Image (cartoon, rainbow, N blue to C red):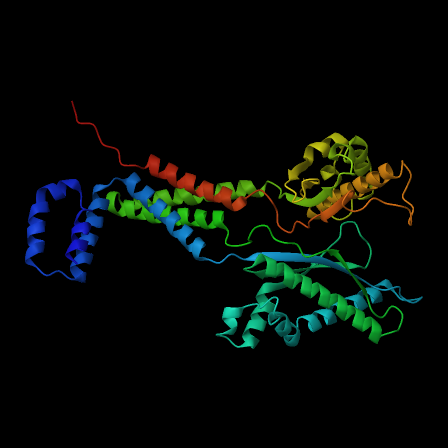
Length: 454
């Protein structure tokens, strides 16, 4: 214990150690210290150091400590990955005289029945205990399976509707998402759910032979493999840690070095900066990015030819039928092929096959469904141009020879559905406004030494 107390005594200011260091060491040898003595020495050293420091040092130290604590908490938080698949359910061909509203109602009822079957206790219990998945292994050793199934249904699995842009069809697209610490198991669970949805729909088709009684189900986007965790959100956690550290530092420094009224003014300045920047960021429209991944084999055309000016012009022309539908206004539509080329982002990826070229196509828009539609249309036009090039400028006829998949153009990952905006980062902007307001308030209200009279 004496060694720990000696280490704690070194935290005292240098002037104190020079004046009382020898006496303190002699006193330490004459007593039998305990844990309470160590805490008293440590607390006195910290108090004396903070009392001797100025306003800026205390604030910066607390801010750094807040970031370090937040980083430690984020590091201890397990990562969560989200995998998503998109399906579409459409009413089968209804008999003559069936109203569209009745077809939609029958389809909604069918979808609800499918969800009840797939998300039932027996179905989810079977998925959890599949040997190739073996989900929640540690939790199953401590909690009853019923609680784990309930948590999986209410928290980990999410089924939400996805509205297709500019579509008047009664068909409805919906997304299935699953969150789990292992990204490969998250994708495997979503695949299992998709398979069970499809199988259950087939079973209901077989059980009910009346025309149009059972809806058709198809997979639009298969389960994706998440490349990065959805949580913890490191930037957001670190920003919160910085803000908390600054607030604690300002409060501590104000108590030790300034009157309480000055502290209140500094905090008010920070809140004003947060509100002003947050209000300004709301004026900036949200941006959504849709991305697709393509693989071009040795027999595929270069990307510059697949997405040349003619293809871009056809995409721009195709959007004229879409203006006014799906929440898209004419002012947000792409006006020319050159504008589309400037807003299009194409980046090369590292393929596992050296003989192939893998690249990602991204498009950003204030309308998420519109961004996805543009990428889908670009891929469709590129695939059509590739087929025309293979067949000598003639459309492909079913049954004719086509190049093997390894040599042609393939879609590895279809156009993603951007459910979350990519920008602007309003929370980061507002947090920067809070920090700037606190810093400016502390600067203008800092203690100033008065000059001595002449």
